[in-house]
Image (tube, rainbow, N blue to C red; front, top):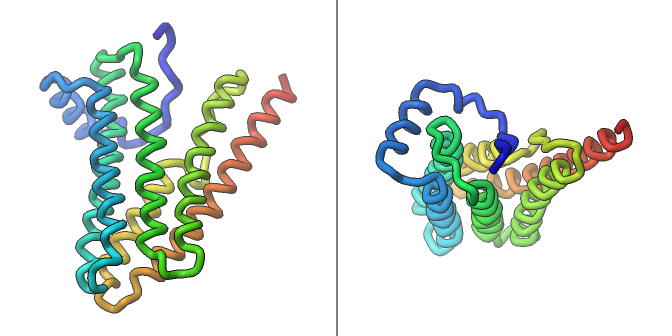
Length: 217
């Protein structure tokens, strides 16, 4: 690649622990592309925990919700490290952008669609899960479209990837705590509604930004 791709602004990228961990991972010889694929493993684990949750009693679901939250955070850690190993540790490859972006789209859908099935007994929860996955993909598509059109890539929210995953993680941890009382599903359902509304707003905002930039040009 002749130019470095635009990167999502992350405060954690500047943290000392992140640099130390990226340096250690780079020293093991694990490639950035492998780290990107590993994020899919954790996303699949998170999605699997959510899909299995309805088969257990309310008190037992708490552990699965906690594991799903852990899977999301490990997926995000891989998302952080693949870019840092590639750029900061100078291991960028010609296929890096593909491996950096495509697994992210699959991981979003694995988690968000599964979240809908986890509370599938509630009204239209499954449909909301699929809608959340579709809208998450749309935010990335519009971001990349902005770069293609010459308007630059925008990572604005209110439900960019890090915001979606933060909300989902907090909701899952809350659900894990409330599960013995049978309140977990209502909390997750509410989070799913917020995800859909917020991600739709993100799609609109990013599209409007592209139109504004192109009109000014």
